[in-house]
Amino acid sequence: MTAVRIDGATRLYAIVGDPIAQVRSPSVFTEAFATRGANAIMFPAQIAPDRFDTVFPALKALGNLDGLLITVPFKARAVPHATRLGATAQCIGALNALRREADGTWTGDMFDGAGFVRAAQRKGQRVAGRRVAIFGAGGAGSAIACALAEAGVASIALIDPQAGRAAALAQRLRPAFPGCRFAEATAPPADADMVVNASTIGMKPGDGMPADLGPLAPDTLVGDVIIADGPTAILRHAQACGCAWVNGRDMHAGQAEAIVSFFDPAARDL
Amino acid sequence: MTAVRIDGATRLYAIVGDPIAQVRSPSVFTEAFATRGANAIMFPAQIAPDRFDTVFPALKALGNLDGLLITVPFKARAVPHATRLGATAQCIGALNALRREADGTWTGDMFDGAGFVRAAQRKGQRVAGRRVAIFGAGGAGSAIACALAEAGVASIALIDPQAGRAAALAQRLRPAFPGCRFAEATAPPADADMVVNASTIGMKPGDGMPADLGPLAPDTLVGDVIIADGPTAILRHAQACGCAWVNGRDMHAGQAEAIVSFFDPAARDL
Image 1 (cartoon, each protein chain N blue to C red):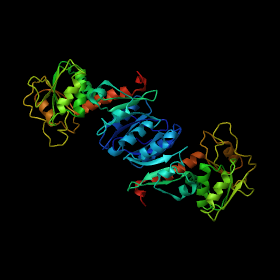
Image 2 (tube, rainbow over the protein chains, first blue to last red):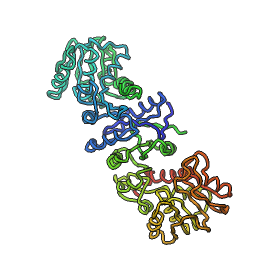
Image 3 (cartoon, each protein chain N blue to C red):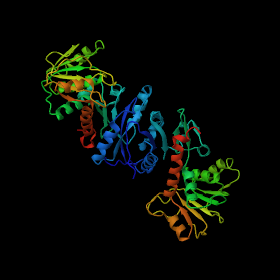
Image 4 (cartoon, each protein chain N blue to C red):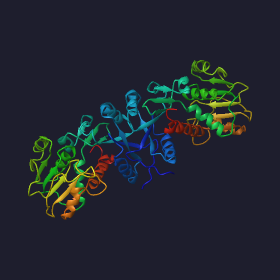
């Protein structure tokens, strides 16, 4: 582990959320900054939801704070606090990273999906052309759908038990990605060769899969957003079927890489 | 150096000021927390003076922030943000440390003077009964005068070129410490056996002493609030006269000790 120092000249990054004690970003990013030789840390900041709209702008007002990560439940509420949005954040209406530009304005974007695509590519997996099924059309599902469409998948079937949520997401994505087919669905289509769990199923130890998937063809790529101590039920199933897989930790690492680059002062105001 | 870690469960302390890059407290306190085995850090927070009254309460609203240090120019402006004040802060109308109590209220106090008294005692120097001259009746001078009076000095002569400032401080201290004589003065009284520089003279490399002190009796204790790379002119004079002395670093170390105890969760709500 790289030695971390904090002094008066240390530049600040914070991750805001509620609760906050479980987040891994403070150690991951602080370590990444130290590795790059930057005098910077990321600290956890717990904000009560009813104080968000006053506390969040105040953090942005700290003169030595250069960037923010935003986690549950603030990813959508952070949007009006950005001066400008990247394409994914614009499409989804949520963001998870904000950086201060040299002129004092703030650029926000959403990297939840980019982390997944980066993690799949790191495992040598082709993404373009895939026929995808995603469980969960909430924040994580939206971000992954957007990133996969941007990466050139052929189709995305969105599965969400909450009435209208999958249809609404499909409708939002269609104009942005005319080359990708979007549909709401109740189960993965028969020809799907990529299945992603972006729901919360698997977070609790006794959870099963988001649906009975039956046998999977071995060229199916299986992804799961859940960060758990062991493999979740859907990933155990993927392993049993001989499929490649990407877990929550892989996505988190892919995303951290992407955001460290986004935060890099050399990349500002591009 | 003790290894510093930051994770989601790390408890926060911040030092607020403007400018902030020069402060030593982040490294001193982060190190002290680590030595005590606490998962806690102190980070520097630069607040523009025109944003203080909104940004400061927002920092206090962070659910995982347990304490604040306040430095220039906010020591007086922080007072209304405390739920209750210690005796020194009350007397001076300024504070430099605030801690969150278990019930969510905030206790503030001023340790600038306590650090000086602690540093003198650490050097084996008697404080009680001394006849003191203090240069500077601003924030640092007020705090030191208050702490010395509390520690039982016999008299304090206050020297400040800004009209009325020394007299106003003397007037504020008299009712709180009836056992100590306070006077405004233009030079140290002939019988003074303690001389303290609490002005900014000595901060710039070419600065001389706050006044021509002439030869000092060797039992005179000389203090200087300035933190400089080498001894300031007044401390070089003290050394030449064979006097004991306390410099800005000693005071800072004494103060850090006192505040780490004040911040200790075991000491809360006593």
